[in-house]
Length: 155
Image (cartoon, rainbow, N blue to C red; front, side, top):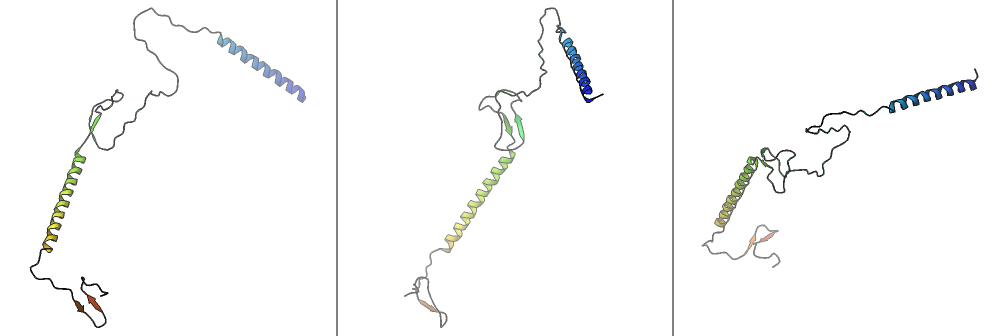
């Protein structure tokens, strides 16, 4: 067989296969749609969805807290509708109450330290009954002179 004959045989076989596939597809589409018949009656209608995809809400709200802690009481259930300002949950206040007590103790300690320091500084400044001395020069060494704090060094 020559090349040309081989190509002709292959082409005829491909056309035959395509024709057979077309016949089978056409036969399958002629089937009637299946219908279920039942007596009329009152009952619940059940709808089922067999499509794939994602279900998304109309409105999405993220709830977050400014503080962390153990939840003591939960007033709403998941999916329940809530209103603005409605009580949602209670966080255990023990940690934060302890922090308030520590801060109050620190403030009381700082006030006591301030009062103690103030009392100590006023006792050192008590007025003396001894007369004050006038400023004078004090000679420390032969090379260097030092003056009292009230007399300027350039005089």
